[in-house]
Amino acid sequence: MLISSNVDVLAGLLEEFRPCFSKPQFRNFSTYTLGLMACEGKKNVDAINRCFLKAKDQSSLNRFLTQSPWNLQKLEEKRLSLARRLPVEEGSTGYLLVDDTINCKTGKHMEEAGYHFDSAEGKAVWGHDIVTTHYVNGDTEYPVRLSLYVKKETCQREQRVFKTKIQLAIEQIEAFMPPAGTNVVVAFDSWFFCRQIVQAAAAKGWDWVTQAESNRLVCFNGEETNVTALASGLSKKQFKTVKVKGEAFSLCGFEAWMSKVGSVKLVVAKEKDGFHFYVSNRLDWSAKQVLSAYKVRQSIRCFLQRRETELGVRGVSDEAGPRSHYTLAPGLQRLYASSPSASFPASGLCAPERRPCDFGRRLPLREGPMLPKARRLDLPEV
Image 1: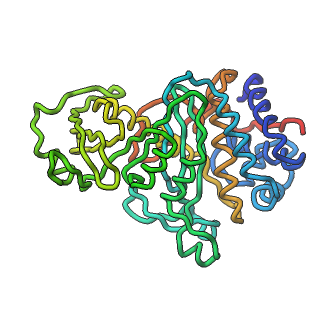
Image 2 (image 1 turned 90 degrees about the vertical axis):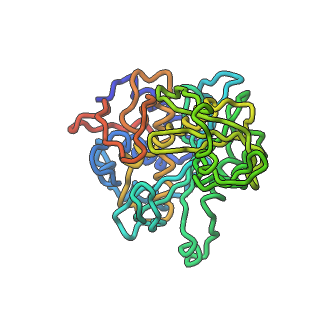
Image 3 (image 1 turned 180 degrees about the vertical axis):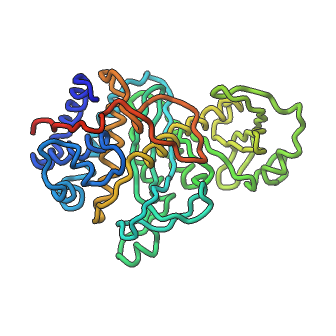
């Protein structure tokens, strides 16, 4: 069950957002945010609404998500301003992690849903494709922004401006404001490894690290070849065994040149399933430093998997619904989990613990200390 001190922490965070809403809107905001954290089982608007004593009809909550004229951008700016107050050391290095994930859905009439290829499933699945950025600096981490990717044919049909996932990621990189006095490394996977993303990071004066596909072309010692052929020609003596996050890797790093990117530090890693290739603009980094920086991406993968498992929502029936849902809960939960006033981590999604993450499967629901099944919540005073 919720401990009173932690209720106070949550109520205090909610109060920070009161200027973003009218009085009725603030009540619905409180209902939805706390309900997502407390609701067990299927998470739809009706189930969230029933978590509370003296709850109004669920239609009020649905209208808040789909029709109420509160400003989503204003809410996001407030959340990020609070996030930038979280403790980080001056001169430290933070990581802006770029990724996309598919939140699978079942309702065929869900707004902005479509068929998207899921590499984990090896096929197209129905759901929302979300481009997202996440910030990690030491023990402080929080989701930054997200954008729903809508397929080109849907945008044309609805006479909307189409944006690729690359364009959405660039917008998020350009908009990000790191904590003052810190350095930034932008980390992204091979799908986002392109000239435009690299240039967006460089324009901000930030470093970057990524992974390259096995057929990526490089120029090394005056000869052009793909990275797999290059790795196959390396001798065993050129590899050095290092440990990163407790796991042993056999690495060989050197400077190479890539078309449309320029000079890069290329790291070849011998792993259980073959060669992997890591790339950074930091020519002065060791092979271990490049791999360690890339492995920070585990934070966003674990976060996205927990969010997909625990924060799915159905029954929201208008365009603003999905956008509102994906914005409201994760940020506030992460702020709560990062708050030094919280005496235990909130369950599931917002637990800040670091642990290895299996990228090939969804994480199961985890037991948490939030609520027994029969318990209902009272809302903060409005």
